Image (cartoon, rainbow, N blue to C red; front, side, top):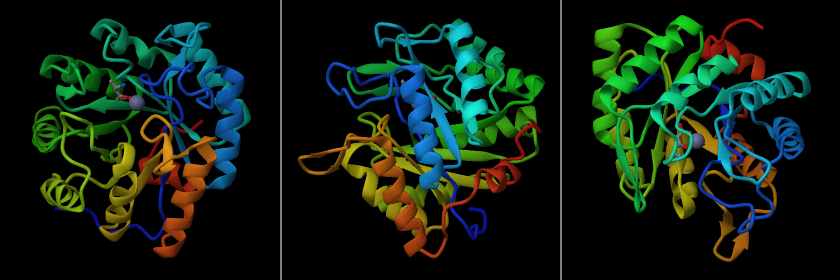
Length: 280
Ligand code: KMH
Ligand code: ZN
């Protein structure tokens, strides 16, 4: 069962990710200054939440806690966006470090509902890790966004909620991550199948399509009443041979599509109400 369509669209921007190198894509925001500049522009263009991966001084993915805390503080200072830290990190990050991300006190955290092949790598999310991370999020009053890369992850979400109760805030928000080589395809058919299978407890969902599945997934999500996640973590071209030069281009396109669907971009304040994040 899917929740009723909301009258406006939550746009999440995922500006950096952990997979693309700065050397390959210089437009990727990897420093704190670049991230803040990106977040501010994306907020003005219609984003309400930012999904954050950070990099070290050599632009390599890191989960260093002091840097994460500094990033959360800077984003809070400079924007009103909901700050969501990735607990997925990179495929090379140890589970113990991924569990500690919540110590940086974000508003929200990603929480992937199962292991998935990830191109040539494996994105590891064993059940005991999922349970521990979920319970930590409940204790820390951090709202999880359940990342669903495959139909089996939808079933795992139902199992988690049945066994361990509702998230902090009492809402259940998830994100369909589609088109990862190894996960569900980025097609309208797959999106409908996943949305139809969502547990009744789900109160809102978004979708993101990797690479060239970005547009079909966004259009299908809007048609089904869902929200959108866009950004250079997921998509590096606007069209064949047309590189994204700034994350704001993807947010502007998402906001335009949401407007056409007559479900305009949601403000960060409305998104906080939707997700019931902890009061500042
Ligand atoms: N970088 C991927 C291995 C998340 O942020 O939680 C995992 C990922 C999901 O990006
Ligand atoms: Zn991520």
